[in-house]
Image (cartoon, rainbow, N blue to C red; front, side, top):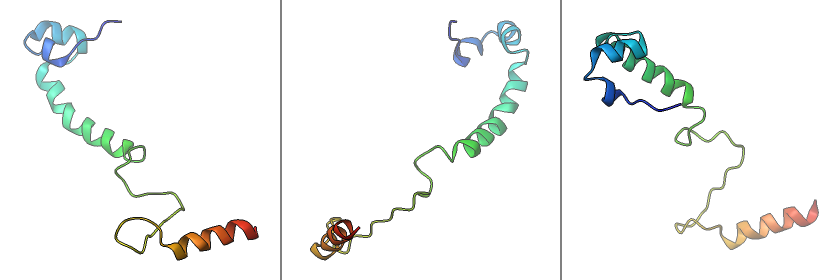
Length: 81
């Protein structure tokens, strides 16, 4: 199946109507509501939303690395389980 772009058909109203069953004005009225609904639905799949995973690492120093104390706690937790 060949792809067709909006920019290709927008200057040919008859072909646009044949392809979409909508006039160019009708199509443009649907674009904003569709985009809003699509973005709302896809928010759960994007990485820009809040993290839903239970793992949280809060480094105490400004370098973004775990402190020696935090590393020790992690190692002890692993060896005792």
